[in-house]
Length: 115
Length: 113
Image (cartoon, rainbow over all chains, first blue to last red; front, side, top):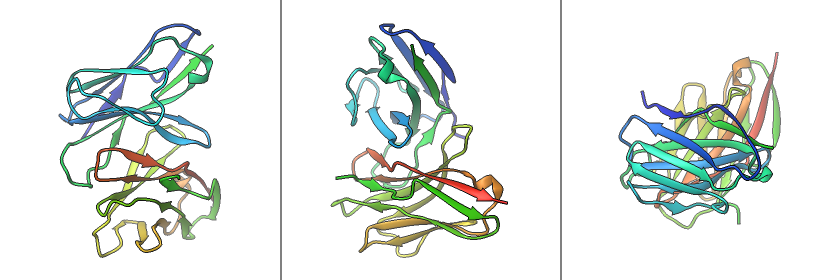
C-alpha cells in the first residue's frame, strides 16, 4: 500500500513564526503536491514538484515556499505564519508518466492554527 | 473560469436509496482524467473512481459509478444503495495533460437512517 505521512496532525503556531510541514511518501513517486483545504473552497494547490529539486507554483503560492531535496520528502514552509494561513494542509503524491490515470495518494492532513 | 464545478454544497439521501452528485468540468485538452474522492470526517482523502477522457464506457467500482457525458462535460458520481458510512464530503477532480490536478469545492453528503 502506498503510504503518505505528514509530520503532524495538529499544529498550533504564533503569528510570525517559521513553520515547516513535512511530507514523506514510500512508493518512489516522482510527483508530490501540497494543497490547502478551506470550507467552501475545496482543495487549492499551493506547490507541486515533479522531481527532486524541482518545484512549480500552484494556484496560491504566496506566503509559502517548498523544498524537495530527496525524492521521498516534500516540505512546505511558511516563512512568517499569518492568521489567514490557518487551514488544513494536505500532501499528496502520484507516479510520474504521461498517463492521465494514476490517482493522487493523500496523507492524513495537518490542521494548522496560527494564533 | 472554474475548472471543476460542484453545484451542490450539501445533499441528503435516505439509506438504501441511490444518489447522484454533480460535477462539470472545463478543459480544452483532448486527454484528461476525472476522479472522485471521498473525505470522511476523519479527514483522509479516499480515491473512489476514475474515468479517462477516451474511455468509451462509464466507470464502475462496486456501488460507485461515474455517469460520463463528454459532450456536456459532466462527470456525475452515482452511489447506489446508500449506507450510513457514505456520509462524507465528496470531491470531483480533473487531471489535464500536464501534472496539475484541479478539485471542486465538494459536496457534503448526509445519509439519513
